[in-house]
Length: 202
Image (cartoon, rainbow, N blue to C red):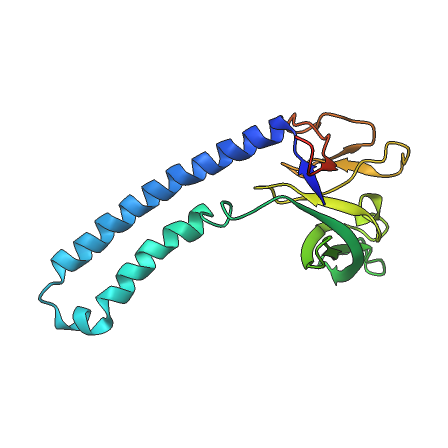
């Protein structure tokens, strides 16, 4: 089995983002502690507070920081790759009209179903924007493409085929779509050189 080779520039940005999330988590937990401590001290003799379930309030206060910070969701993430076996497209009409008779603006939502080498299936959103109908994820993703998910990122990256000038290059970190042949993301400066290597190789 092969493994995903992620550029150092992407790894550095992901590490920095996770570090920031940890700082946010600590701050949120400190705030939760102050609030819960105040609630317990101020309402020690309040029977209504006791009957309302102070334990539930405290649990909620301590769970919310993990939800808002994204920890540990990012920590349990991992690199994986697979092949797109289907793309489901949903067209949602916007409320804006070009004129009384023409309504060309739509929102396209596209979900890709990816099968990994071990047979597992992943559903991943690959497109969700307000756009004209003829501009869709087909300029980046197609059924049969091998795509990669890098640890800590939110975007699927199709493996590079520099001979295919119609396809665009997706940045693993920010999701920006650059023209094919671009090795550096034009938005965040990360390398777009993501590829697969044999797991036996270091």
